[in-house]
Image (tube, rainbow, N blue to C red; front, top):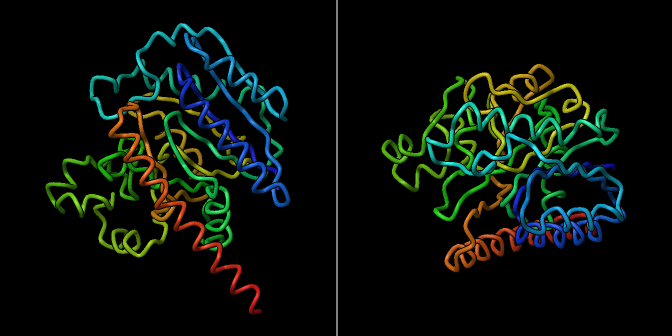
Length: 293
């Protein structure tokens, strides 16, 4: 299966070094199952981001767009959690970056696309985990699967992009006040969804991204980002829902780390190691079942 991997970046040198190493490992791990192409975008980096991305993609199938973008002067294209950063200028800029990333690649010929935001960490089994969900929940009409990305506090990271099926945007503060911090790890206020999340089953949403999403490429070809109001993913997901359903996958965990402090490095490493162990155990059990058959 052909899979497109995409991402938008600026001044992410240390992350790009980790990402390209991880993607190389993914290529080796799935060399007999999947083929990969890449679609990367970068603007106005002052470090080695552009050089590293160009070096990676020049030996692979894909397109790398690097440009000077006046909107790039907006501080931090990836930052979350600060209400002051949630401006129309910023979200319009992000929408522009995401659309430009795919301008030269559409229409994509791949079957699925893995969209990754900067500073989102995941293990090499991310592809297998998403593909497993596609196969297991194909009858639910899902065309976009999003990760349960958490930050160092263990809470759901991409809260602004998230809207439940009642089209309600939920803040962490509200969920913590109602359910306590442990209960707020389930990012939903709908009883049946909280139960599904707790059981590890995907929940349908009107909007989500999580910094890491697996979307049917044929659907992505017909959708674009814009930000007439609020998060740029709201309008994108509205267009996606005209083609099928969107879900959050509680068991597909990624980690957001924006600031590389020693504490965050340790937290990220621990959470990733836990996820890797779970993924390996799951694959080993699957092999055992297959061998018994």
